[in-house]
Amino acid sequence: MVKNIVAKLKKEKLAGRSGSGFPTWLKWQLVKKEKAEKKFIICNGSEGEPGTFKDGFILQNYPNEVIEGIKIALEFLNNSTAYIYLRKDYYKRFGYKLKKLARNPAINIVKKQGGYLSGEETAICEAIEGKVALPRPKPPYPTQKGLWGYPTLVNNVETFYWVAKIAKNEYKNQRFFSISGDIKNPGVFQLPEKWTIKKVLQETKNIPNSDFFVQAGGGAAGEILLPNQLNRQIKGIATIIVFNRKKTDLFQLMKKWNNFFLRENCDKCTPCREGAFRIGEMLQKKKLDNKTLKDLFFVLDTTSLCPLGKIMVNPFKSLIENLL
Image (cartoon, rainbow, N blue to C red; front, side, top):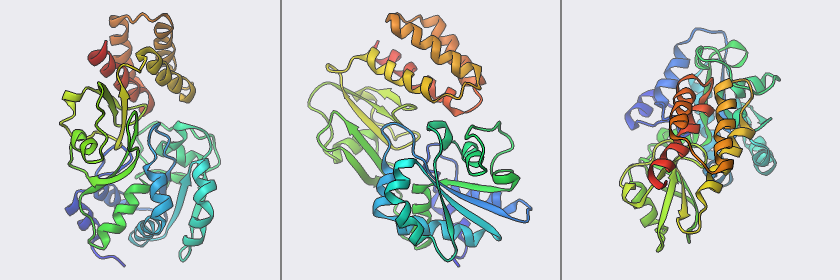
């Protein structure tokens, strides 16, 4: 058994790699402190954010470390059961191998049902319970009441990978970056987490010669940044998409985002559903009403049931401020 794993996670300041940045040690400790006859662990391998593919890279190249990280959690939480929740193509590609590795103790491999929202932590609980995979209101949080009402630890694939590395004192304050777009060297890169976006692009030889902008933090949730705004660390998911400014139709790009939000929202939340519809109307006319958008962004950010409505604001607001 790994001794003092929470202390190690705290010392290394490991934050969740799903985008929320919640301290991993604190989440583990919160689940540990809950009094319950059994507890659950979920490794989230749904990776539904557009432009993000680093968890798939990890599952392909480092499945042993992911399983090792989950087993450390199983040892840490008494009377616990673990699940790996994989999006459909990952289940097809990696499910068999993971099942072979996930023995002694057994770890359940589950195929994702539904789209982007079914990768939200409470929606995963619903899916594993055999229900429709839609987010639950929070609180209570999964650390309090997750699967079948029991305390549940939810971390994503990359987080469990780094847990295994930290347990062996092999963590070097790095993370995996998904880089794509109008560049020469797309792919997944393991780099220092404190590097700025500019340095990441420079070191991977992905600074374009032409005028460009980037979307950093995900292909849906990420904000739009200009070259002079890249001297900062990435926020959220370590995803960078590079766009050639001359070749990119900004309204088509915004339509792409909006179609994603229209397709992926659950229709349960009025701000999210109606907000995406109203934005779509303006994009169709290629006429943006700044006052209406400001009101929509405020409502989405403050009243949406789940993170989908809140993240909808980021790309539109930053693109309008920087490029229109």
